[in-house]
Image 1 (spheres, rainbow, N blue to C red):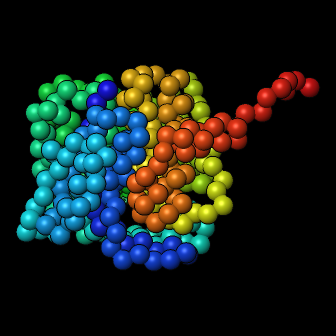
Image 2 (cartoon, rainbow, N blue to C red; image 1 turned 60 degrees about the vertical axis):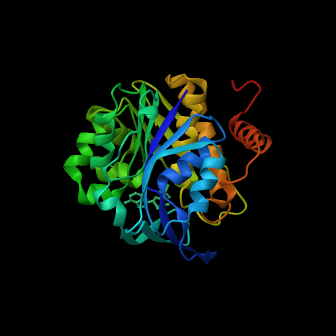
Image 3 (spheres, protein in one colour; image 1 turned 60 degrees about the horizontal axis):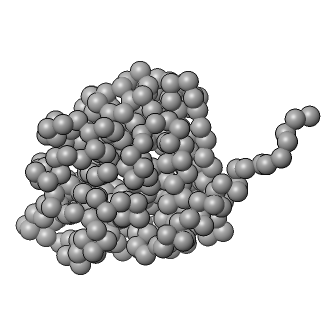
Length: 308
Ligand code: AMP
């Protein structure tokens, strides 16, 4: 089924204990759509970049099968720029710079050919743009998944709450869930978020995995313990990309299937962190992905009889 993603397409400058990059390609929608290409050939993107963005990178997405009809290029403006520095634990980071540039007044135009999309991924972006996009779709998609971050809680609180009220699934990290709800317990935080609109809540805990909350159910997927983690940037977006793409591929947005989708999201995120930026996500094989998923299943399955 067709998937539509809106989100940032950006330049990032990243510093981790293992190294530092100059401006490299990043952005939530970049990670999400790259991930989606391993699941569906009906992946569409709505985003905006400036004239400084390399055409080769857009062409690369096209070659991977992404429909970029909704990607606007503002020739005389600069692309969104974000810079972050990770702490030694690699699980937390400080944002050093956020330059909205073209994102500042982004008007998301929906090409006619995107109108029938059944799965909508609202990647990290101004909540005003995310809600405008929902409004502009003639038919509400069957499933709307939203990602956001603390930056929008600090700058657009009311608009953020409004957008959250419109979606089916909210995917945020633990720190953001606490900021959004004022609850330390993630179980309470998820319950509170469910009263704000989304019937399903995903709370990402970085290297400690992710929790999925439904009405009466809870599910946990660990993150794969990896020998080498070089750069966690984009892991949350890649996770969300794997999650929604699996649901779109199987066209089954039930809670039961979301458990599998979380495993796919975690598997894709485990690739993302192994290299800087999007590099590791650019050329994966189905065999590698299947092997990773089987490693996840092995990690959590006990087998045998567990009775005393
Ligand atoms: P993640 O590590 O999954 O939280 O995502 C990191 C990506 O989010 C980077 O590639 C950034 O370009 C992008 N990003 C950071 N801040 C923002 C923001 N305020 N709005 C949209 N995208 C952002």
